[in-house]
Amino acid sequence: MDRSKAVATWTHIVDSKLLTRLSSDFPTMVTICGGGSSGKSTLFNSLLGDNFSPVGGSAGINRRVLVSANRKLVDQKDIVSALFEPFGCIPDLLRDKQDLTTPGCPLYIMSENIPQNLLLMDTPDFDTGAKGTYINRDVAQQALESSDILIYVFTNSNYNNRENTDFISEMLTGIGMRKCFLVYRTYPSFEKEEVLDHAMTVAHNLYSHDADRYVLGIYRTDEDNAVAAGNRYMTLRPVRNEDPSFMNALKTIDFRTLRIELLSSILKDVLGKAEDILEQGKTSHLELALYLDTLQTAQSLCVQEALQHFPVDLVVKRFTEIWMSTDPSYVKAMRKTGDWIELPFRVIFNTAKKVKNKLSKTESIDPSDEFVDKIEEDLVNSINRMHDMAVNPDISVSSTIKDPIAKRMLEAVEVVRSGKDLHRGQIPRVEPAGEMGALTFFVEAHPVVFQEQEKLRDTNWKLVLQSILSRKEVIVELSEEIDRELRSLADSFRSQMGVWTKIRQTFSAFLNVVPATVAVTYILSTGDPIGAAGIKVKLTGMFGLHDLYALVAIPATTGLKKVDQKQLDELLGPIVKVWLNDKLKVVKELFEQEVTGAIIRAAKDAIDASDDVLNQIELNIEACRKAMTE
Ligand SMILES: Nc1nc2c(ncn2[C@@H]2O[C@H](COP(=O)(O)OP(=O)(O)OP(=O)(O)O)[C@@H](O)[C@H]2O)c(=O)[nH]1
Ligand SMILES: [Mg+2]
Image 1 (cartoon, rainbow, N blue to C red):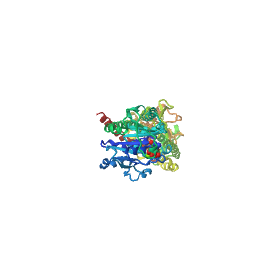
Image 2: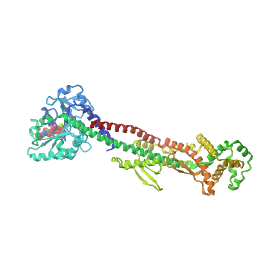
Image 3: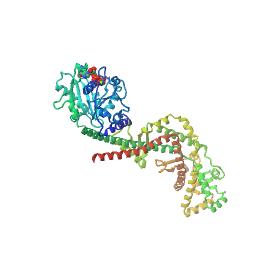
């Protein structure tokens, strides 16, 4: 059964059927139960000495529960409504016994023959119909779950019917341990041993090895035509020598002790079950956290995929502008006079003209078309991948174990796998990935997000893509945030420049190389066919923004000296990082708005809510356990 359904069934029983009976003055409920036409109503009438309940006909004649109570009990204020609370409807006094043959709320009768502290119930059968569609089972079950003691009536044709005894066994031992009387409607010719043997088969099927402890008495009632004809009441005879007469057995039961025993066994089971549910809840909580981590990791990777191309033209140009605008005035002055000294670069790279244009302050900065195309391609690919992962029943994602989130995921996988309640088909698993120390996580989507996944599956993906692409400008443009960051980067570069560098810069400025390394970088990268549109950016660090570091892959074709390469890395690296940090945020927002947001929110909300609930359950269980030992 689905886990949440099982929990709901169980909490329903606890809420509506058990808690009401914690009150000590609540009468003991004795319920007659059994398969169709086994003789339940005949027994009920016989015990009360009146023909209250309809008998005979085809199996399944009783459609409602009939309760008999002493008048004095019924006169007590509120007792009837409390009694019927588990049934969810206001009970009525039985006026016409034919009413019992149509479905509806339980009915009650008042009888002087029933002790004041007792209620006797006749129930519909639980086995008329076919498996899955037993017509009276729900009504019968409701009564049985509310009972303290059952009287199980069986016949020679159904004593060994496992389906029947399994059902009754669940009622007797499912939550708490209930005791029962066994009543065997048998043939007069059957010897005592045979009757006992059949009855013990039933007892064993109900309680397994605890039969002796929980069977209150075994009685036989022999087939009798006078009973069938309605001329005589049924008589019960003890099968075992030690058992008293049925009425005596009923009267001498210490109901207080029985109630206390039953309630403490219920409480024990309830606590045990609550602990199971707590464990399941914790596992599920962890599974959800694992799924969320995996989804967000996958998203991080997709976001990075969307940003594979760095618009070097754009960003370095902007940085250069900022740098020049913050140059000391003497450097600026020198620069003005040094227009002619771009010659060395022209000689070396033959791109000086282009450089001059690009470095000119008057020209507006526009990304090249080629770059915009690349961004669009990257964006479409990555968002499609993200969409697939968000709607799929499972995600797999690779990560290095050095990453703190991967560590957390690995722990979660281990706990979930060792949990005893693996309710879903696949369990999470981890496999080594290609690189050393890298792992691939395989994680299923958690039921908490199914609804949002469904919605995402139902959206018109083409329209979503269009909407995303219409906003690609956010990737292309240089935001104020980037500007601010570049400015502070320029300040920090400048503050790190030693005397030597400053002197060199003075020279550089004089040579119109401003600042030398930036210009070199610029020329190098724009002089390269790949770099023209945006140089490739390789990212280290797997997750989110916190440990991401951009390595600028400078094409080997540029023939840089090692020293220059290092200088370039030092300079270009942080500039790329400024851009990346900003864009990672922007693209992540875009992904969450268009694809993953609702799923992530559903998961986070459920995690937050269940955190509190799980803590509360744990505290409550502790309190109950403590109270039980005191
Ligand atoms: N021959 C004989 N028939 C009996 C005896 N006890 C009950 N019956 C008959 O068995 C049939 C079913 O009896 P009920 O008491 O209606 O059985 P039930 O278990 O209440 O049946 P449902 O309410 O339909 O589930 C009736 O025709 C009874 O007269 C008995 O001791 N001897
Ligand atoms: Mg009946």
